[in-house]
Length: 140
Figure (spheres, one colour):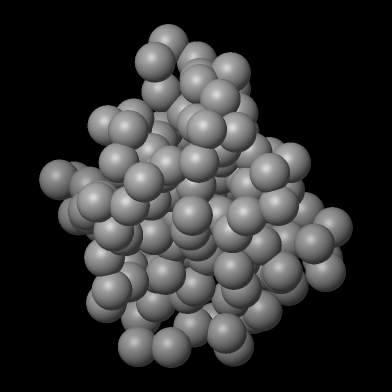
């Protein structure tokens, strides 16, 4: 995720302040200025808050989102673009498209329905030339 031109991630949320409990939990889990996507998902589930609220808190604390579960950013290893896509997976992705793109939430749902990893859905989208949009944490 790139920093906002106005000075940082927090600039995307003028006037917002993080919930103290959520902010404390995020700070405890952050390493080297980054917080993994999967950890954010787990935190949201444990605290009963929307994933988007964890994303806003990360922005307000100027902590980067790392290790996208779809393999889109924050990973040292890049998604494989040359991998063949199973017909059932391709069909599930094509069915879930909105305006020619797949939302992050839809990608997670496809992964669950097809019993594949989220990373595999990200790689399939790369191979098919499909862009993923609307990160549930607000990164893109």
